[in-house]
Structures are given as C-alpha cells and as structure tokens.
Image (cartoon, rainbow, N blue to C red; front, top):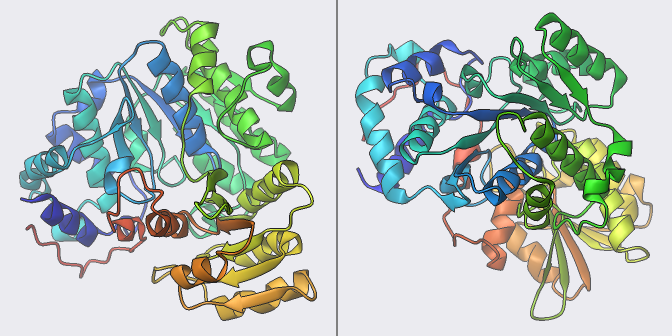
Length: 435
C-alpha cells in the first residue's frame, strides 16, 4: 500500500460514524495487542483550547526530557499532524505500515459495524506511540468524551478545558448536557483538572468527580497570576491562552508524584510551545499583517475579538470569513462584523460549508454600512484583501488549513488532505473496500 492509497482508504471510512460508542475501538485495540495498556496518558477534553493545552503539556514534558506522543484532531493540512512524537509528524511509511497491519483485523468486523475513520486512526496512534517508546502520551478527545474512541484509555489525569456550545447535534443543547459528555473521561480515583467556569457545567463536572471519587482541581482566572507564569512570554497570544497555560501548570503539578518536572522545565516548555492557527500572526513580503485563527464557534470568535482588541487596538481589520453550516455562524458574524473594516465572505472547500450569501445580511445588520463582498473562493478573497494592512482569516480550522496552503505557511507543504476532517455519518449500506 502506498501512502496515497492509505489516505484514500481512510477517506472512505468517513470519520464520524453513525453513533459514538466504545465497543469497536476497544475490540480493535485488543486485536492490535492492547497497546494502551503499556502507555501513560493525559486525556484532554473540552470545547475550546484542547489543542493548545495539549501542545503546552507536550512541550512541558518534552522539556523535562520525556519522549512525548501527541494525538490531536482535526489536522490543518496534513493527516500526519494528528500523530506526533516529540513534535515530529508520523512518517508516511509508518502510516502505511500501521494501516496495513490493521487490515486483517478490520476484515473481522461485520459490515454494519465496521470501525470508523476516527476509531481506526486512534488505534493506529496507540500502536505508533508504543512502537516509538513514548514515556507519556498527550491524548486529545475527538468529539465529546464519554463515548469518544479515545476514552478506552486509563490516564494519569483527566483534563477538561472548558464547556461551551458546540457540536450540539451530538452532545446536547444545554451546557449541563454537553458537560456530562465531556466529564465522561473522568475515571474512578484518577485526578481531574478543569478550567470550566460556566456554573451549570462545572456543577456537572464536580458531581461526576465526586461520584467517581476522583480528586478535582478547578483552575480559575486568578491562577493566571501564578508566580510560575509571572513574566512568562507565552508564544500563543491571547488572555485565554494564559488560562490554558495555568491549566497545564496545574496538571504538571498534580502529576509530579508520577512524573518529575521542575518549575524551570515547566517555564521552558511553555515559553517554547508552538501551535499553528491559533491567533497566529504572520507578515507577508508586502508588509501586510495576517492573523490566522481557527475560531469555529461563538466562544472562539469571542476570544478572537478580545485578541484583536488587545493586540491591534484601533486597527479595524479586513476579515476573510468561511464557516461551516452546522456551526452557530449567526453568532460568529455578530461578534466579528462590528470590528471589521470590511469583510470578504467565502465558501469553505467542504460539503458542509455555509452559504456566504446567507452570512452577508447578518454581518451587515451587525455593522450597518460595512462593506461586505461575497467571493467565489479563498484565493480570490486573499487577492482582493492583499492591500489591507491587517487581514484576519478565520471561521473554521478546515478553512484555516486551506489558507495556510494558499499562503505557503504550512510547515509540511501542500498535502490536500483536509477532506479527511469531514464528518460523514456511516450507514449500514456503506461498503468498505480495502485497497
């Protein structure tokens, strides 16, 4: 199997599946030798900030001399971003070898209960981290937590960044319902750490931790003033990232009995962390400043708005926006339009894209007199916005990956593998064919 064939096979799996459940990933992992039983994990769930917090924890423990696996999703450009060891992307050869080794096991599943894309990739990641001799794995949930494929592990700590509205179709339409799904990663007797501040969501997390007899540490905004963080130049910009850093610090302290890490190593890790696409500031040769941010829900848009007001006060940007139709794009438009000098609305290169023509009146209502232009695609918008001193590209991580490819900002080059991020509910009639 070539790498291209492996990617095509994974694409045919879809990534979401008809339902969230643990039977398939447990069975597939068992067939693969149960690698999770020989690894140590920090399991991270939450609505926003999961990836940034994972990147901070990875950087902290790598600074402490550990060999650290990092499992995150979605990817921006290359599928290989999802599985990293010491921030080195899994190789194409490893992807093909791992998938090839799983094919006989996949054939043992009935057609109507075939593992999904995410379940397969989760087990591939487990095997890779074991083969690479990882001392610790920073393990991000894909969707929710309780029934997410990643929830087949027993971690050293369970981490919940925050609870906001997102993925309501699958997780529930109230914060307590969403919190109940996220809190499903809390295990009996295993320490839990959260930065959740929504009272009704925090109550659910507290109740779950008490029921599981899991020690719970709640990180709040005053923890941002921790002496360990004082004067720290955090590469990830925004006040919300300071809170994510405080959360990472709390986790590292909680686990010191099992994994020794000094204050110096924590500061070193935080000061060198990298996580593209989260209020990422770049300069073009023309002198134009770009802000690329993967905000894809109202809470993310609010954090982006706060960042623009903090770092670029009095500088209304040109906003290039592309969002998914299954997101609360109305609220996102209402949050971002009042800050904009003008807006270019684009379709995302996805079947899930929202129609820019539907976004336009919402943006104009939120900012009367705003110049709003509907573009046929991202490259047209970037070209038309090229003369603006400050341009913001946002609305979706999928859209951001597209922008990074177009702008030459991808560290792995153009991969054109963003379609693997699509959610494709499986049906019993879906036919799975190995390459």
